[in-house]
Amino acid sequence: MSSRTHDTPTNAPEHREGTARTGRIGSLAARIEARTPAHRDRAVDGLRALALLAVPTGHWLLGGFTLSADGAIHNASPLSAFGPFAPVSWILQMLGIFFLVGGCSSVLSYGRRTGSSRAWLKGRIARLGRPVLGVTAVWALLLPLLHLGFGVPGDTLRTASTLVVQPLWFVGVYTVVTALTPLCVRAAERAGVWAAAPLLGTVAVVDLLRYGPYADAVPSWLSVLNILPGWLFAYQLGVAWGLGRVTRRHAWGLLVGGAALFAALLLFFGYPASMVGVPGEARTNSHPPSLLVLALAATQSGLAVLLRDRLGRLLRRPALWAPVVVVNLSAMTILCWHQTAMLAAAIPASYAGELPGLTTAPDTLGWIVARLAWMPLFAGLLVLVGRYARGFESPWAGTGTARRAAAGLLAAGFAVFALGLA
Image 1 (cartoon, helix red, strand yellow):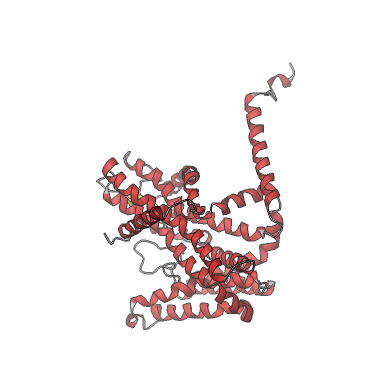
Image 2: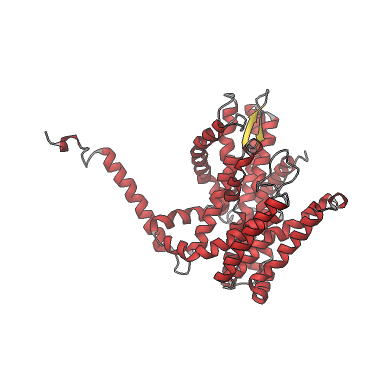
């Protein structure tokens, strides 16, 4: 008997369904390719998509829960038990790349503006603010519903609120940095890549004061002075990059110099190895950013500039370019709602008791394996939530003043609760 009798017929339902699905994906990729403007910098968009996806990946992988006796979930970190895994945070902490491409994109957009600088800035801030207002207003409505309607413990709601707010600080900082774009442009036009050097120096001085020999005499609030220069550093590099003021020689300097500074700070100056905060640790690198964060940002920025052309050629393939476009179009939705997606799995699971990788303490290798298995579910829930939440990214042209005011009040109420002020 011929072996062909055992083959699946090419007209089988499964084959036809798979072929149709592949055809739809290919058609979508082709449409996206056809609509992409010729001037679009695919490498910058690709880097932004990579940095965006690193945010939920990092929060989902490095953030765990424990379950208390009353069934409430509390935040926990696997880095508390697995210190040697800290280098994972070096890869997942890609805010340096995000600010770099943000500065590059902003200066290009700023150069193409048709109105005033004020109008350009107002549009950028509105794009950032609408999704934040949306997620906080929705959670303001969810909190009483979950507590009164479903009996979710108050401590669980506190944990959830903390996680929802956690990525939103970035939007506030990014808004301030974006408002400084005209100043960054003028600085880059005069000094090129070296316009970022004073920012690095400022953070170094503040770190010396708060961690040096006279640290005991320095007030604790001094560290907040690092917030603006710390995150503006990579943005300023991005502005210089967008203006064509960063050469390959500069890129190699950033890569090698940043890596050398990073290694020195870890080996000789006692900086924590983790790029994210670890419960129980006296020092943290990211809140506010330390000199180690800037060293990593310089390293990443140098590498990004060196790989720009190669990445741009790679993303000429429609099948690779289409996902990048989809991620970029959903940037604020991913940033604002990815913690909600994880909570949508964790809160119901807390009623079932301890589930490995979800509501058990993140202190075993088994937890890491189990958490990796949960992550596709988190991603699926984010896609589901995003189908409805993405509307917050669009202009609220049809929304009346009363509704906008109500959303603002709800968001303010949620902020008060999330920040522990109520």
